[in-house]
Image 1: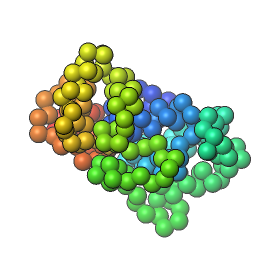
Image 2: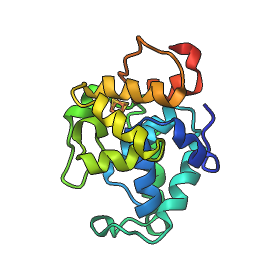
Image 3: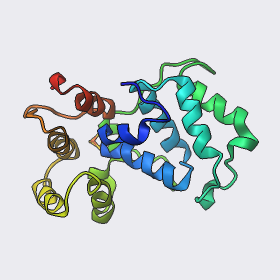
Length: 193
Ligand code: SF4
């Protein structure tokens, strides 16, 4: 992938629902809570967004007025060093210089890092209206209603695989989704499945 701050609004169509949700939250509120920001930064890094583009993307949003009262103190113009450090840290260029990875699906389903956390697996943790509001960006109402029936008793990763099959229009009968990055890679290279 070659995700940039300019093409991400198109690329988001290839993101799994968990990460697409964070993108839309960021675009709408211009802020994310700490762990949502960290996980989403790692996802974009692993999908091929360069550090320069990541800084550009986050700077764009964090320079806008916040629409999230709990994060009202977060402002790129006041704290550019702090935010730059935190993004460079996620890219393994500061602190312990670790090669951090996006959590896998199981961890995303199990973790609730804080009361303000807006992330998580939509197939596992979101109420029906919230799940539908994400999926309806890719489906007609009829398709969505049928899809919801089909995934009613499925595990989150199986429901996610079904959504990928629907979106990629590809016959990937055996695919199991275990990581958000895997979903993205399969979307852009269906031959992988
Ligand atoms: Fe994301 Fe995994 Fe849930 Fe799919 S199953 S939405 S990739 S956490």
